[in-house]
Amino acid sequence: MTQIAAILGGGVIGGGWAARFLLMGWDVRVFDPDPEAERKINEVLANARRSLPGLSDTAMPDEGRLSFHADLAEAVGPADWIQESVPERLEIKHKVFAQVQAACREDAIIGSSTSGFKPSELQEGAARPAQIVVTHPFNPVYLLPLIELVPSPANDAATVQKAKDILTSIGCFPLHVRKEIDAHIADRFLEAVWREALWLIKDGIATTEEIDEAIRMGFGLRWAQMGLFETYRIAGGEAGMKHFIEQFGPCLSWPWTKLMDVPELTDELVDQIASQSDAQSGKHSIRELERIRDTNLVAMMRALKAQDWGAGAVLNRAQPAKPELEDSALPIVTVQRAVPLDWTDYNGHMNEARYLQAFGDATDRFMEMIGCDGDYIASGGSYFTAETHIRHLDEVHAGASIRVETQVLLGQGKKMHLFHRMYEGGRLLATGEHMLIHVSLETRRASEPSVAIATKLGEIAASHASLPAPEGAGAAIGKR
Image (cartoon, rainbow, N blue to C red; front, top):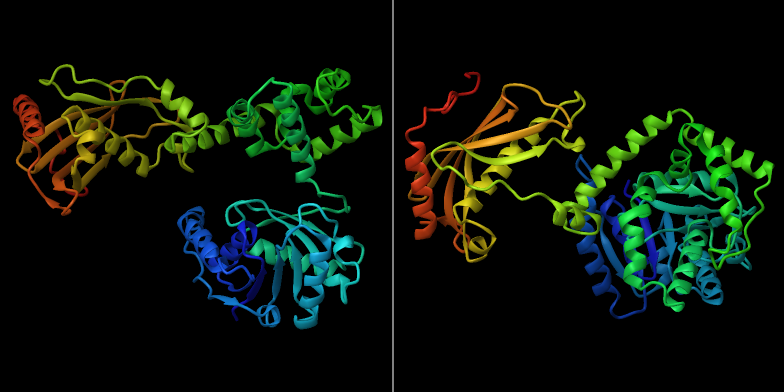
């Protein structure tokens, strides 16, 4: 049976909730008096459809049905989950909850996206206080998993568990905040950073850009995969968290920050932090944590590199030059690189898809060498791969230095036939044979390349014609 979510408020947060529920197979009913609400939510939904399915390695559920309702009671009546994302004014929220509870099912969960109010404040005057909980998300709601689930003493354990189960089922991470506090956990932490940033700007010490660079080029990457305390546990070395606090704790009394109301680091507090850190991370040695950290950092930074963004843009700027065409009478070196950590599989060696990627990179580099570069492609011409045959001859592991040498078997008219050999040192790892056809990007049909490209490709093909035919060229499956 299809489940139903009612979304009250169609702004950035409400739209994100609508998108997450909808793409996870729920029917979604939206109430928002804003005449632009439907347009705004559909725009958020378009972004979610583009991005969220890419997080899954299996098929997503069939998308639910989206409907917009002018009447709040009509929107919430059949809902299993009701998510309130109206403006952060307590009197508005109280009014909305009263209308909702007059029309909704008694077993429905009512979650509030509030970033500041405690659940007990939201429940004041409610017909059924136990039905209302805080479910505070982070933008974009359809991608970031964290939901701060904050109950009050009025919420029974069954309601809290039901909310956890539903949030987990739509791909969220419900962080159960066990004690009510203004602004919950994450926003209190962010507020401290935000306040310090404001002081740095006001005092003329840093610009907004410099503050953002400090985060995204350094500790932001560490926090993304290990948070605060596990990061500091590693900083303490083999002696762990207690050593870190003993070494760096005294600096909290130094006049570095505008936030000077710092808890005293008593032995009791130090022991409490150290024991919690042991429970969190003690199953791993420091060296293991370092390797886990490094693997995650490489994967994240390589993702940023592909987007030429943040720390990834720094990597791109610092990247050594690609191989240049030196002697066209010999096979041409088109790739020289190390095998990155995220190219390996459960067997510990480079997986088959990455062999194809390395050969694809070799083809791309060869295309650049003959003039089929970004400018040429932007003008409307390119080569499309029509056929590929890869032979996997030996395994290779992360960190290995690989080299791809490319031989042209045919470079005539619309066709380009390449044969790649991948080596680690003198050890042949694989070969890749690729037939490409030059196409017009306007018609998407085969077309003649430019005279300059045809001439350069023809010259290399003529030089390579005197080379021995590669072993394995034209081989069928099972024949080497």
